[in-house]
Amino acid sequence: MEKTRVIKILETLNELYGHLGCALNFKTPFELLVATILSAQTTDVTVNKATDVLFKRYNKPQDFANINQSELEGYIKTCGFYKNKAKI
Image 1 (cartoon, rainbow, N blue to C red):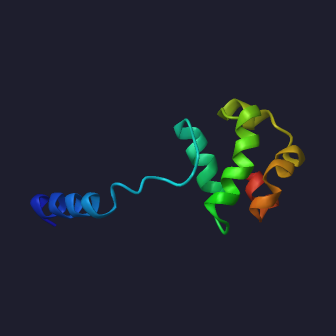
Image 2: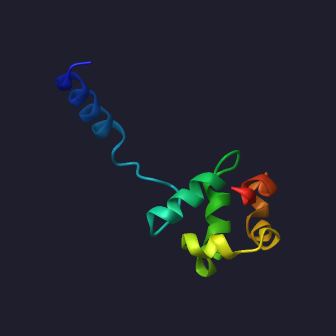
């Protein structure tokens, strides 16, 4: 695809959808990553309820590396498929 066509497509998409933003609540790119993983097969509203509590205690990669899987499952149980999502 030519560069000018790609730029035009991106501009059009931005005009049509650029104002929408993201429905997930997050403060850092890492929090967005976690919220996005949790959002599979559930609503953003459900994810935001879970991450509101979760991110107050755990919001950095080191935190998630040290959390017990069963404890994490407790935080994300409402998101569905929580056993699989807690393994990631």
